Image (cartoon, rainbow, N blue to C red):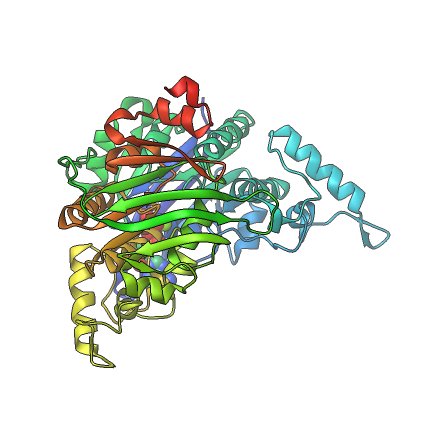
Amino acid sequence: MQKIELEVIGIVKRFGSLVANDHVDLSVMRGEVHAVMGENGAGKSTLMSILYGEQAPDAGSIVLRGKEVQYRSTLDAIGHGMGMVHQAFKLFNSLSVWENVVYGHEPARFGFIDRKEAIARVVALAERYRLQVDPIAKVSALSVGVRQRVEILKALYRNARILILDEPTAVLTPQERDGLFDVIRNLTADERTILFVTHKLHEVMAITDRVTVLRNGKVTERMVTSDTTPREIIHAMTGRTVNLTVQKSAAKPGDVVLSVNDLVIRAGGMKPVVDHLSLDVRTGEIVGIAGVAGNGQNELIEALTGLSHPDSGTVTIAGANVTFRDIESHRQAGLAYVPEDRAVTGTAKAASAADNLAMGFQRKAPLARGFLIDRGAVMNHARSLIARFTIKIGGEAVPVATLSGGNLQKVVIARELSHQAPLLIAEQPTRGVDVGAIEFIHGELVRERDRGCAILLVSAELSEILALSDRILVMYEGRVLADIPASEADEEKLGLLMAGRMAEAA
Ligand SMILES: Nc1ncnc2c1ncn2[C@@H]1O[C@H](COP(=O)(O)OP(=O)(O)OP(=O)(O)O)[C@@H](O)[C@H]1O
Ligand SMILES: [Mg+2]
């Protein structure tokens, strides 16, 4: 007999007139992986933050292992065995792994922190769940995937019995995601329970036992994963069917818009991270960059957008040499840019939706008249984008700070797609958005292409690269290892090329 670990009864959470959680009931079995799904703004993160004691519900109760609990803070929730890994990690970058893990619960000896004992405990815990980390490494030196392991260790160190993972795979490479799934399996084998929020249906099918679907704050469906299909889940989330295959005709590439010639970026090391790289992107084509993270993609994009400067080589946008210019000059030359990191680079949290939707384009017609920003035009522009991209927000004057993750991503995409720029560089354009929004954004990218935009796409999702690209460049150790028409590529071939195995892929 499976035991009920957590029961949520009638949780209500309001923000002004908005009901983010509307009498949510949820029951979670001990040792299961329970998916919480729903469209952007459906109320998933709000529910998770209530379960972790970060926010108090307006009504409803939480029952843990048969006992009703009331939290005054996250400390109470942690005391009751709750753990949470946030999307934006909450680690101290200047401290080591072990210091972060034991923080607030340090083993002491003679009134001092017992460093040896602390490290030994962290090592033991890491071994038990096979979470590979170096306990004395500084967090600032770690990759995203390893930082996430540190967050999990921290929760386990506090004896978490229920671990909340809110979109844990959004920032992971496919390899890191497989590693996380192994850890999840080790945890559930030890009767730990996982609440798993994701937009990725294949992950739900692969790792979860049951699914609860939220829509506009209400539970619309409860399903056993093995008895359902992605199509059914999508229908419960959206009330419609979503077409996940991209409809597009053959590309008609024209003139070169982005031209990169013999680019070298050393980034302080001996071996260049971008190594004599050349590429062209033409009007009317989508060029995808595939590669295992860390093969120079980030440095390349930084140099193409003006965020940093290369050591040598040239970058031209629509004929203008912008190689050593700043991001503003790149925009002037015709760049639209969807950055990977929407929260830090992509938006200003305290500013209104209207200002965020204008940012970067505010000095040009139609948002400006002469040197002056036309407030009316900025407001109208925002209103129409909010409607077109179905951004869930109270109005164009509302700050974006309280937007859900996916809605914030839509703000960035809407802004960058709305100005008919000749060149679009899009990094992870659908990260964190729901299936319906993925369908929409993919459609918009193809429309931009057909309007004549030159699009350079970077995505960690091979399926997205394959679905959207007309041509695929595989980056390996700072070079373009292969340049192939998308029609000749599949996941297996790309996988081999990304590993540098040219001969086998041929
Ligand atoms: N502090 C807040 N103040 C006002 N509104 C808020 C606040 N926090 C969340 N909301 C609103 O509550 C709704 C639910 O947001 P929530 O973050 O729970 O959505 P979500 O299901 O996690 O979406 P996503 O998939 O995009 O992450 C959204 O409309 C959001 O704008
Ligand atoms: Mg969320």
